[in-house]
Length: 127
Length: 327
Image (cartoon, rainbow over all chains, first blue to last red; front, side, top):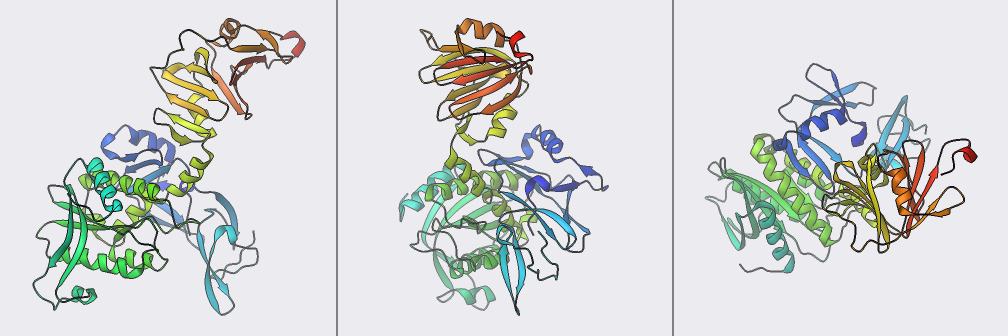
């Protein structure tokens, strides 16, 4: 499930939360880290800084994944708020969910996710 | 240099511009391998040699990192077979690389069918445009801008670290992240009202406000068809009915001879002079902004609203009571 860039949760190797805006502004001062800075947005390399992103799992826990680049698009896609099971998430409109459709599974984008649908994980869409 | 088609020529020119050289095109290049017994040969159509058209872009000298680009000029979307083939080519090149690291990229202006993503992921091949969101096809110019963006970022990236990109699907993901944001950007470009100076990039109201908020008004004037406010930090705000341009422009100057804009004050829009508007606005700071279509209004020191119109300015006090705060 996609998490929009604005909602990314970043932590350092100590598990301390990092504020993305402040981090980006700090890294802007290190030109060698800037991979691209153009009309689409900014991408900086952070692979050597021990930064991790936290992604929510279906069970409500967080999975820490090492981050090599941080992207700051100037125009991100539309963001929706959805409640799936007991979790309320912000997801991009184009995020893909796998839902049960009778005895089969099908992929549905977040913008077409309807209340009452049941994900492959068994969780129900509430809003 | 000879080119098979216009796409190949444009890709070559973009690669030369983005990388500053080290780009070649090979037609009907024969991929030499020592034996036909290796599994990667199985996906080739012919015996142990495969002829390919390839744009070769050298990204780094030490270690030598080379990007192999396949430019697909197709009438339909590229299919999994195209990705499988290029994945096999890159895999074989890496197998006999002798220290050189090869990455593979496919550029297909007509897009890719949905089955391509799984193959591109497993073969660690980048695809441009991405399979993402509602739009799966883009015009050729946009696809080539994606290609250029990928080349610039990739060259910078391999200077920092290469090895982690070699493990699938890291390189595919890297390219995907670089080109996946074009969808939102294209939607903003269609709107086209806000433009960021000096390049004229598509921008948004929020970005415009962030650029001007807190800055001090230094001067204001009009030009044929619009008005300008110069702010501290060499930032300008230029209003025309259809466009709002903002950003750094240290060289902007009023036209000579100066135009006499239509200036108004107070809610009643009484006539006034540009010098009067200047006397109030210069030295104040931007504290808010609103775009009303045919005019743009910026709040100054939370005390005045300065309106930029295509024919002049208006100025209104926002303090209460209104009758005691007339300008």
